[in-house]
Length: 302
Image 1 (cartoon, rainbow, N blue to C red):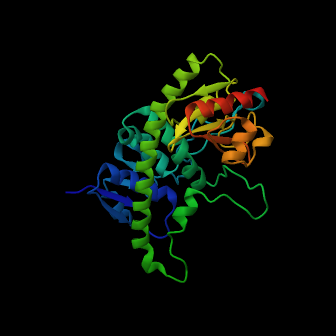
Image 2 (cartoon, rainbow, N blue to C red):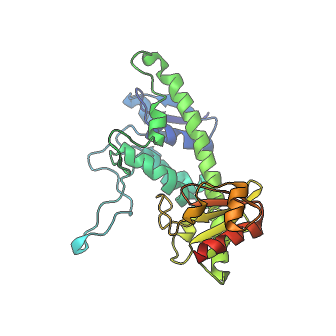
Image 3 (cartoon, helix red, strand yellow):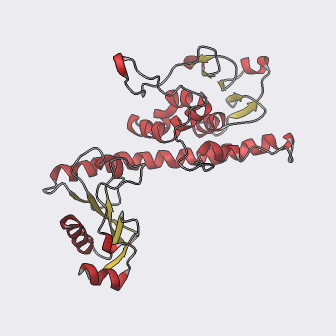
C-alpha cells in the first residue's frame, strides 16, 4: 500500500505545500489527502500542518498547538544575557529537521537549505517578517508569495483548490530539488574557496579557477576586497561585501570605469581585452584571466 500523507484542506500556504513536496521527493508514490476530518487524520502515515500533534517518531508534524513546537537557536543576544527567541518551527521546518539529511545526503547541505529556504518559509508562516520595505508601498516578492499566487481567487472559486494545490506542490518540489543541488555545490565550492584564501599571498585579491559560491565564505574574512573567477566564457572581477545580501561593496571599482564597455574601458584601463564595468561598480569583465587580474590590481591601487 502506498504511504498516505495528510495535510489540511482549504487554502494552502508555502509551509504545508513545501512540507508535502519534500515528503513526495522521498516517496513519489505516496498518496496525499487534504482533510480536517480527525478520523482520516488518525489513519495517516504522515500528518503535516494539521492534527494538533508534533511527534517526530510517529510522523506527526503540526505546529499549531498553544505551546508551539520550539524555536531555532538563531536568536540574537541582548542585555543581561537574555536572548531573543529564534525562528519558530512550522510544519516544513519540522519535516526538514527529520528528513532533511536524508534528502540532501549530508548535514552540511541540509543546514544550507535550512538557512536559505526552510527558515524564511517557517518565519512567514509564524508571522515573522525577515525583511522590511525601504520604500513605502514596495515589498519583497518572496517564496511564500509565489505559493500564494497558486491559491484560487474569489472569482475562480474553490473548485480549483485541489488542482492548484497539486500544481504548487510540483513547483515546490522542483525548488527543493534545485536548492539541494545548489547546497551540495556550495559546500564543495566553499572548501575550494577556503583553500585559495588560505594560500593567497595577497588576501585582498582572491583568484579562483572555477565559478564557486564565494560570497558567504569571503565575507567572513576581513581582507578580501576583490575576487576573480571564470564565468560564461569570460573572467569576472567582483567586489566583496561584508553582507552578501546587501549591495554594499567593501571597495567599489573606480568611478571612471562605471558603465564603460570594450574600447572605452580598454583605453581608460590599459587592459586590451576589457569588456565591461557595471555602472554600480561591483563587477567588471575581461576576456582573459590575465585581463581580469590586471583590472583587479588597478582597482587595488586606486
